Length: 318
Picture (cartoon, rainbow, N blue to C red):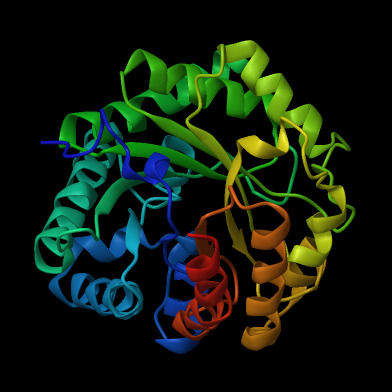
């Protein structure tokens, strides 16, 4: 049963942590093979679940040490119909594994949640196609495409859903509408290129205002992920209403472009300390950005550095 679906604790203030670059960590640090960059396949084996448990617990431990709440994202970024078919999962198999991912997170929550340190269970959705290339769906098609996965999360008891690494306004609108039909809170996380714009050239402002306008502000909030802060910090304007809708950042470790990362055979882990300082600058300029984690190339070291940088500011501004 969903614990926070009707009262998300992120809205009550304070920093919430989340994890880092799941797939890059599992591949480059743990030496696992993830076909088509899909982590959800690990749920099918005891060994795979053990790897995932260790992965999540590294971040949950940091949250507990700093007295912070946590947003537990399911490992299901690729668990949608097109990618599932490439991995041998039919509709029933996808529904089952999406629901199983939420039950897996519930076990983690039972072990790690403590009074005043809520763990929100979030069903993670990925783009239909490649997060680095423009999608071609209209909003109606996107709603029909994503509603089944969202429905599985809702039925399994997720508190909310978030679509990550979206670069298409229409796909974001479709996801938001699909979540509304399933009566589950939804967030949208856009990714941008090195110029701070979506892959087709739309600004973050255009993207957020378009989604809000087309869905009657159905989204709980927005995030930015899979881009380095240097790629998007110049696109943000303090005091603007659309920027106030951005409540979270999950940045890449590397300053490289998406094209450069796509072609790289090695992991660029960047500089965790520098990344922490950049998060602090973002938090000072935009205090609503309080859901903090990482994306490609980041691991528990980066998230710990973000905490070390931002927590003194949090204490002073509390």
